[in-house]
Image (cartoon, rainbow, N blue to C red):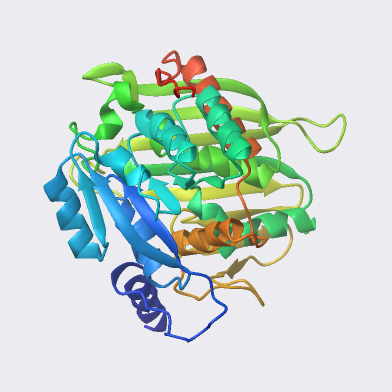
Length: 396
């Protein structure tokens, strides 16, 4: 019963009614960082709006949408002070001198253009994953951010939570010996992603490997602590209405062994937009897990993407009784048990913008490498990369 209450308590604080920070007079405090959002996307409330409510150093300031009535409704619902709309709405938001941070949750195919424009306007950018349609787009975005002295972060929020970091720490400790195999899956039941969903649109970077597949790929790279040396095979389930789109992909990768002369580390990643019901009518639960097999045992994390709701870390040392761990906070660090992956991510992002050292970070090199792997998997599956943006930033 206590565990059920804990789930409810965490979900309520993280996704329904986050506690607001206390009003404390501090004459030395700098003004809050003002946030602008490009697009009134469904991901924005859990990914940024709700985490921002509990952060004392940020302010929900403006939102832009193609439809100004939608922007206005979103702004009023979530407490934004300003809204922009129409064909120039996105640019008008970027031109607002009060805005410090831009959150870009637009469709994948628009990430490059509007992140480049945001950086050119002098804004720090929190960019939804995957960072772009191609690795070249990702390189260019981070290059411009570096030139401008601005913070750009690809929003792999799961990396900021204590749960996945605990798994990495156990692997790195050597308790289970060297890693031999690491597999990860993110698959959702059929019917959640409909035919009219932007994820099914090739022209704006659709496909399962782009959307849910980037997570297990990132996760196995993180736990292996290096990049794959080869994509052995990749098989895509093609969308019946557009065979350029994958509704699911399975890829086999190899990583170099840390011990010279030993077999490469094996990896299988799976993603799927449409897990079929059992026996044709019983809906399945989402599959969200990662498992590493090591020399002297194994470790598995259930629900690595959204661990604040519930997760379990199961450690099975050879010859010993298995144990289960859960971790929602960092010992001696920032955070509350109800902090979502998104809230931990926002904490790190603000720390970086403020010139403080974040607890963890997703580097430009990491983001570029993940996108390179996605392209290699698409190439191996026969689908090919998503179309690269033709946008060119005007020169002065």
